[in-house]
Length: 297
Image (spheres, rainbow, N blue to C red):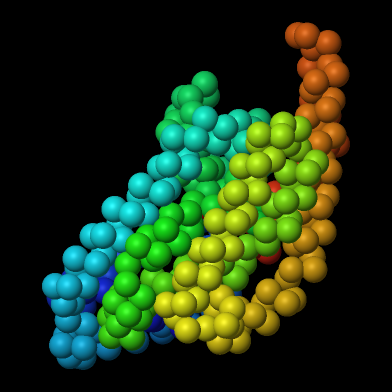
């Protein structure tokens, strides 16, 4: 299981027989909602912690050259991420048009306000709504943006060596592939078609989807797979089962967002533009997509 491998990927002598886990609200039911499932979840944690305690730390020894490569990857990826998110003037307007970010705040989805400062930019968003909005459109941008540029800036043989010999790096690459497997750029493009009415913003959307493509190619060159997580039988089976239902919810959500925003534009100044039926339907799609993706932020 991914959780088992992730625990064992920790650097040597960091767990030492004790492990604390923080679960998101919706994942508590998923991992502990039924007695047998809860028992299985605890079995995975216990087995991994015991294996870490009695296993050899030599197999997880981190070479200095890998640390240097990771420092370079971090610098390159961070620069690429910030160039898009913080240095592209059209990014915030695009984000607010192409995702349900504004509606998430209005519908009070989640236990905390969507923003620390309602009038601020990206830096004012809380982490969960920031990721939640991108998950809803199936682009999952915060999870992969910058990784492709980082990988392209390092010698391929260095990355494959790290992937083959360093469990921590391999686990992270595999988790990235799991996220990439869940992305649907065609769905994200449909949101843009219905909700974005500016040619400059359209170009940014196309650029982001192209970055997703090149990032996927860069990650696959490291892992050696033909497509993201194609050897994860459970994930692939789940995607084949869930996607036809989640796709429909995405189409409905994009249509509902378009209607809600059109009503808001046409409403007289100072009047209430809320439509309870639209809000209820939108909330159903938000919850349905989050359940189908099995993540909210």
